Length: 217
Image 1 (tube, rainbow, N blue to C red):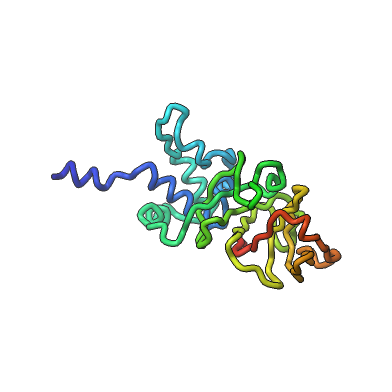
Image 2: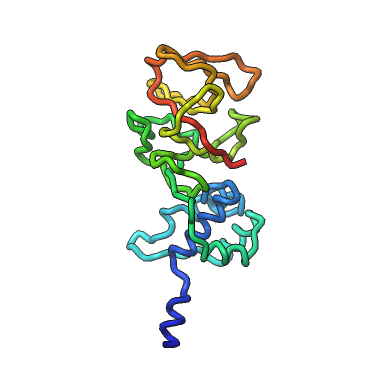
């Protein structure tokens, strides 16, 4: 009986990694973003590093967990709570660097994530089963979004005037802007930098448009 009780209290591989994912999400970061902030290799907490090439479970080191906690401004007690905490409304969604969003093969024709380069991130709200996340890289979208911010993009959420949107053109360009007007023939977009002029894109040139429903800031 004693041995059975001890076995029930043992930590599992999934619990530890799940807690790290939730720690990153609550800090508004992807697992790679948390690793970078902690001064670790950006791939330290990636899904691909959690199992070895021969299928054995790989556990994070105590040093990497300690650095992650310090980077997130969290404590070991709060991490222990994250281990036991049910994910609740958190759900993993595909995550890609914004710099790669315009590359060929990143999305299929309907805007579904595809190809290489995608990882996953647990976010606090992701009701749309087709939602995905983009990690902002660089300063091009300031002041609205900073380098390292995560935006959750929902293709299933209705879009209205004034919403921030992501537009993928048939030429492969990815545009983040505020929707000013949408007609059967064109999209009128206001760049996030208000000093820049409005832009009009013909609907015939639009591959897909989706609403930004959440941002880590």
